[in-house]
Image (cartoon, rainbow, N blue to C red):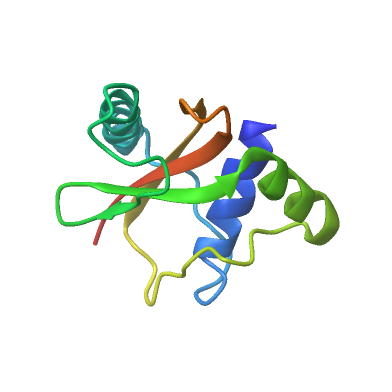
Length: 116
């Protein structure tokens, strides 16, 4: 299911600029590392489970509760709340993971990496 969520998020990211390009293998590790660091902070209680982080060195977004994301994906085939690139990047990668916080809610996070 997480692969389907990642693919839907990638399609939505590119909805203003055409079809998504294949993931750039050189950026896969970057996106995966960003996501792993964020999940580590969540597990350590350093970041609130509902927080997203955007910045030049980190870009991790909370897509929502797992059940909400799955329901939206099944009903619409996309992730309506996701953002968009204004111009297509030269390369990109996305990593998606689900994490169950201390409150027992499983949430889905996506990390993106791209280069202009």
